[in-house]
Image (spheres, rainbow, N blue to C red):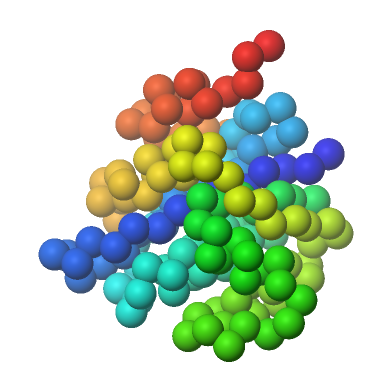
Length: 156
């Protein structure tokens, strides 16, 4: 079974920081683990989204996941990850890093989702200011994301 890995990133220039949110779910949509992280401010939002993809995949490898679908609502990053050729874009080296990490998975795909399909990761990112550096929740999401997560569960 495939695990879904959703990720998001946001820049907060007034704080000179960026935030990343990641949620790993099993094939039924239940949380395996979630995380929020504050990082140094990258140059562009696309670089941040690509860094977030790398962090999301690294987190998935740390959890021992072997079959994943990496999902994001950024077509630019997902399209670059799905390209077979090297990206000449400014974030091309970061894309190469993500593809290198992707080699550790038995099976992986990169999928673009609409904004509402990435709402839990987006919420984790927005609320990363409540964490000190890096926080992980095993088989859970933080309380401020629970309502969003519950609304996102598939109807049985």
